[in-house]
Image (cartoon, rainbow, N blue to C red; front, side, top):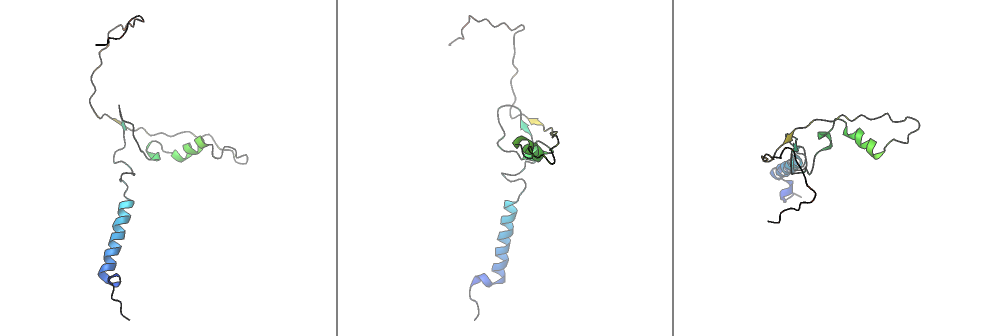
Length: 118
């Protein structure tokens, strides 16, 4: 018996495989919203980064995390050697220009003064 459904046609099969391929590319894109940044940097003032991959800040993040969680700390057969963190230096980026703060020289703070309410 011959198949009359579109699922068994060559064009439909290629279209379906193309859709699967595009979905895999979308999910595995390195610079996606949950992936890596093009140029990782820390903001200088005001904003805290919400997500950074663990290898952005260090060359040996797995060893540092294992040491902090105490993994392999009670191994009496092969004691763990001390871990030395190998940190990366990432640049800082300003999001806005800051004004210059002018301070009197010398700065004298009197304890019996109240702040002005106007």
